[in-house]
Length: 148
Image 1 (cartoon, rainbow, N blue to C red):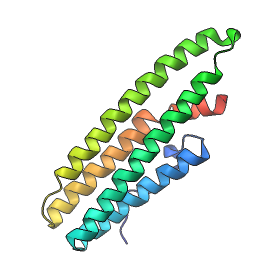
Image 2: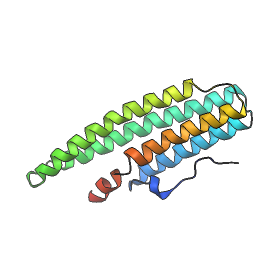
Image 3: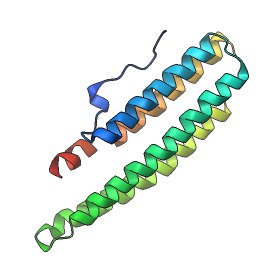
């Protein structure tokens, strides 16, 4: 099976559960691309897209909870500056999750008919969406999780 998105350690944030969820999102995207390119029935594609949406929603909620927990742990007085920086970064990151989830919805609704060109566009958009999440937004989390 062709895999447009290969797992890379650069997607890792250093938190085993979140990293496993990232791996699952990569697998979901690859499953969708494979099904789309091989002409799977619309019911199967719909199920795969729903799975990606569900897994993404769970992942983003879990990541938000982990970040809030980390933020709560930095409340000791000796860490007041770190706490202020962390709180601002956590809230900004969580706000970005809402935008990321909305963007996924736009991509899913725009999925066109099952043609090779449409499959390429969908796979490219899903790959870009994941890379934005994993590289652009989550890569700095590795530093936070290493500090825990």
